[in-house]
Image (cartoon, rainbow, N blue to C red; front, side, top):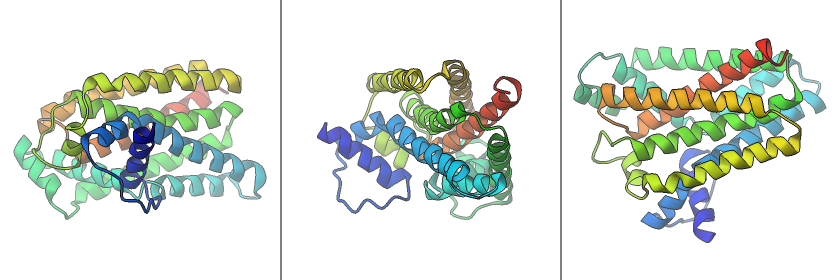
Length: 263
């Protein structure tokens, strides 16, 4: 249990801007626990988003536009932009239209290219649209589905990490990949089952969550295929891009559910 807790704290140090002033062990056993705790990190982030969103809409005089903007800002600040950096680097690499090795070299360049800038503008503006429109049509179940978005995106990150070969011999992805194996992913099913139990306790949302799981699986399969085809495997940047892409499509899914199912 202590290893699992330290693994969770490692995730907070690496993947959020929350200050954790501890010297945590980075051996194989603790990194393995960190990989197993990826969905828990996502659920933690999602609960913060949902709680903050609820407080803004129910207990402040802010307009829907202001509430949407503050949640949008929080989604950027909480992660410290680490996944957005991966999104921009992966976009620069892909749109270079070069071979796999050249794309990896482009991604390693500390300078951000035009395609990286354009892609992050499209991603963030789209996310803001989806969040704002959800505020206009918000339901009680909406908050639970918002909490589910990072849970599923971090699960996709872990599944990609342990089921796709690394495209590079070093880096953050290799560090975590070398510490765990696909058999360690069994904990992810426990998180999903646990969230279904939470929905049962919270009064519904099974159908919506099931749809979001299906979308996450589709995105996972797409990312697995394209990571191998375009880059020869995964890197830390590609994992970050996968997290951002998954969350974008899940926000879009929730937005569409509000229009066509939850209305």
